Length: 141
Length: 186
Image (cartoon, rainbow over all chains, first blue to last red):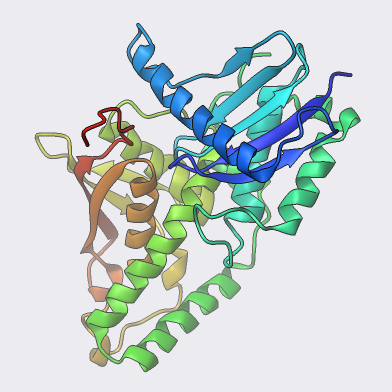
């Protein structure tokens, strides 16, 4: 079963609020992950301008030789994206499920400040449970 | 796999965990009473309730979008329909309808069929200026602001003040889409 390399969540201004990596491939230190996140935010925005068709919502999928990057942007501007092995299935469902977990464990936590880095243990636990290899396929619904 | 379509308010309301309605009514009542004790001025309480609603709304919108799976609305009319049909149903279990559109399509009324916040509530003479359910106007305002719409939400009719229904006026002030700053000279 194909692997997930890392997960990012960026707020509507492009700031990184969550970075999680799985396995040593593609691990990044804090500064790099911050930089990459804002780069992705910019590319996502630029792609909407580049689009020949009106109403483009941004980049959903980036396919490269060694990885795929799936991105989901909520209507509130928060972006969830995952870097995984090429050909990994069910990533869109994973991102939608991450959004539900975010709405539950992060936003419903009254001590979480909006747009700030996520430090919610319950969120991270639920996320890890969802990522476990045999569970990702179950997210298809 | 085909993407799931938007879910109906009833379906979502049935699928989430629910709490005893009396507990909800009592909790809200306790909040309003405490605010009245702390702030004393009815106008201040109205403002605080609206602010609390705003803080709820900015978080509630993601919960709403995640659970209901609605896609981007094409115009403000669709937005208010979704708020009335899906939003109110999903969170309060009440139906609502949208009426009284103005000529430009930027201002309408949402009429609630029912309101669990005001079960058993009567306003005393000392609180006649109070908008007891002002938290709801803040929630709508906060939620819409997070999806790039600046709105003004006010109460037109309030059962606790003697009218026959709860009617909220929702006015779209402007759309403020997130702009990416491309120009270097800005």
